[in-house]
Length: 461
Image (cartoon, rainbow, N blue to C red):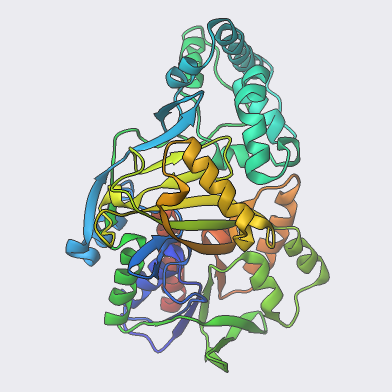
């Protein structure tokens, strides 16, 4: 298909890039505006010195066959297969992640284990026989796992990670972010044999497979978005980096022009269709004319959890025995070692660590203060990962909109904003930030493909 129509995509993360991939391959003129200096959004890397540092642990799964095969074709030899090796530090030992119940019980004294198991069994019986709808994440966790396990395992970690008590988080958070314990499935099957079916209102996310192949690159996460961007440009599309969207012009219910700043200049593009993957509140606040006050107010209620990522160059061959490890009681919540997935690290005899933390804008972790670094060094040494003297350099990377916060009562605000978006006939908003969701990379790309197919359908009408 060839088209004189022009599609503008706001944001060049996995969702926006793959939407552009589908459109450009179909012969549609498309421009991607990416605020960062590289395509990829959170799913990229940054070059510091001689090494690439990922913005977290980002590897491609094979679950979506169509997208997987397309990405493998685009990346060619740059893609390398990696066997999944994720762990969680729990009760003084390391276990597979997502944490399975049979692993979890190894860290619990026998009599406590009996108590927690009975609580789990009671929770399943109760929600099966007397269904009830949790009012918040605390009640949802109690419903899924029982009060004893909630207090023992989930309560403090959830509070520390988000900076919000579970009772102030929506139950929707559990249905989109919390992996399911295998013991819950075992109990459900046992109850099913007696004709008792689960009628609970809350269902946790299906856990990732313990044995699967992921896909990475010798230069880290940057390779995949770079290769997709190259394929888009080969098909006639444009990728504009360092482009900060400043205004989205709307006339008679349609986006007509998108304004952006680049290198100190104010520029704009005419727009026949628009796909937005930038944070949903930003889209609302950049709209011209200004949306109704109730929509503006609703957008302000949609919050994101900022992240600060410390990329460390360490004078050791290897630091951890996994691709990444989760921690429940450290200043960081996850540490990854990309070299274990094939990343090339210079100089020889060194490795890099990706140390992930949640934070608030302006706090000591966001600023990369001496206090933050010292706490990271101390916790890394306590975990036997490395010592302060081993750290050659520290590279700090930020994202102010790292994770959507499913705060209690966020749903009507999100619904109000999305209703406004749908009222603009040539506008779609999707992806992690644009849809206020929690997709992994292949799911985000599928969202982009879906948006692109909607555009193609409209252009063909």
